[in-house]
Image (spheres, rainbow, N blue to C red):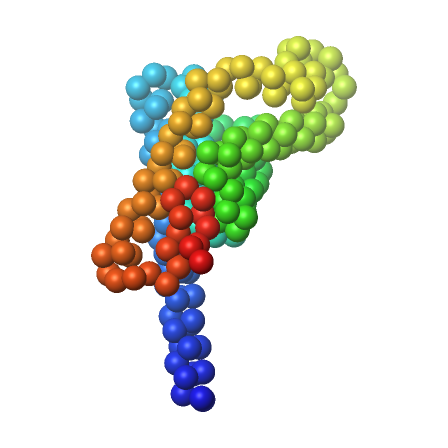
Length: 218
């Protein structure tokens, strides 16, 4: 009985270490993609491509549904900071802090919904994007509260409050939001299917993940 218990604990330890290593490797991969993909978009179409197509969101959101919530949070937090450091995109102020807050919370929410609650990847993407708009509005509200009234009086109309800002940003980013709704589920489902196929090739998996749901089979 003791030997069986020790063997079971050893297997659990190995599984936990493997999951941690997988999380770290995938997290690093999606951070790198979060830097490289925006560079490609900017090179193809100029600086306005970031606001229109939200290229950094694609690897961060896709990665969030493939890693643990904690890793997803850190990927969302670190990616804008490293991208700003290495490429100057996004600008340090005011965009970078707002993107760090938005993407880290979006990553956390996306991972919790898909991997912990088993929500379908398409619905997870839609809910996460909606939460991101809310987080952006709250960030703008906090930033505006720190500015002197003289600056607020001379600011453009879309900077007068969080709702006009979010509305203007969302209108500009409609092509990017559509792209995310299409590509994020496609990437996540493709990676999950690949992982399931690889596991099946090695023998009957103990708990294969159901495609697109993030759940494990009973």
